[in-house]
Image: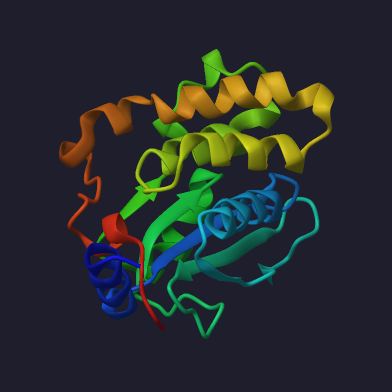
Length: 194
């Protein structure tokens, strides 16, 4: 390993992990969304932990799941006030989970994408993953491969379109003006031990 690679590895051990909370209602794909995030982070070589469920997972009940990744993650739970991102699949889940965000943390909600442009209304969770993906240093092809593996192949094209719609959403185009973490911020670095 060269000196630059050693320096990056040493720096990554000291940086904080990336903390993501995905919240929604039962049946909206909260668990699938966290599975995809975790899979992409694993493909990128990060240590990943995720909580399976908090709340009522039956259709219509509130559901929130955590995903944490970095150099070394010891706990799957995102402590209150430490989430870098709150991905809300339903607007009613913003306020009950907002306390989990760190100061300067980013919310991504259904209004981040134009639902009228979705190939199917059930693809909203994938579109919001696209919006999240534009804010993380994880490669787009890995996201698409994880989306492909998470669903029946016959749904891939619609999910790919939804993902790309979210990735190009107006909030992501606004960048820093929309509160997007920059590469030198903890969420932009996405490394760490905790």
